[in-house]
Length: 345
Image 1: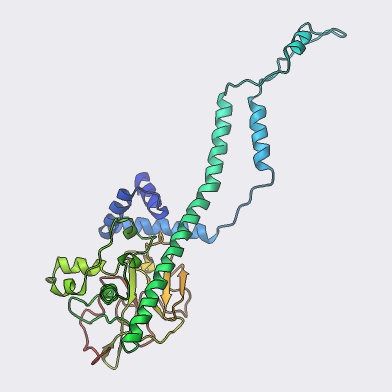
Image 2: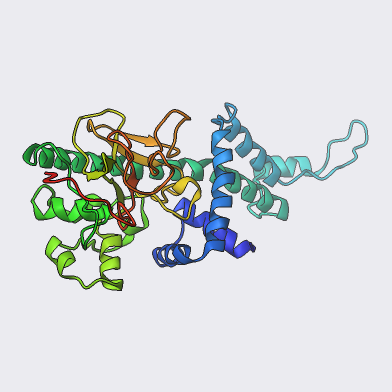
């Protein structure tokens, strides 16, 4: 990995690239496995640094002492002189008449070095704080979006026998992102931008377009349909159903506090399928009882349910009612679908 690639990937994770560069790199990451590995390597290094982060407080009076020192360095130094005992220098009276000495306004090489050092030190202290503040603002805005979608899902379940939007096992609607067209078509959501995380690359687009259910159903199988399915869920992932007694069932709203219904979409090219929506630092998760939390990993501990995999370690429908699998927009419940439950909703 050369320096240019490393700089681009670091800028991508910090959200410091121009919009066009950010989008171009995002597209390249989808197909370039070497670049994906490089990004994962940098994420791992940054994660270890964040884990050991200690708040730094500069010593009191550091700014005053630094400025005083810089001022002293810019003052002209007095020329050494030798006086005979008892004699007054002839220029002493002239200096007194002329008034106090004025510091030179010229800057030397040392002065420039000192000033540059102060600016760099200030940048290193301030920039991380600014970036942290921006990242936190995006996380908070993302959580607000998920809460709005959570209320829409609850409303939908109240009107549909207690079930959330159904992801069919096969057909043009058989992808996790179908939740968004269902909610928008039904009027449960009014703005497509609600399903876009402010911390995702998708947020940089001028306009977000979510296909309608009729557009999906009329699309010919192939590249066009695949494209619609991969983008219809915005930048969030949605929970697939589960299999029980040999049949496929949709998710039922039981208001479980630890059952993940949605989250920042997983990226299947990353370790643990970590979402890229917040630079790989973690993902916001919407739980069935309506609360939202930011989790640094898809599996917080050994006992916890993995957000993005079922109990057999697959990106597929859950293996039982409490096995939640939040999947990216284009993910399907099965490669070979079992029979669907009769009248699921």
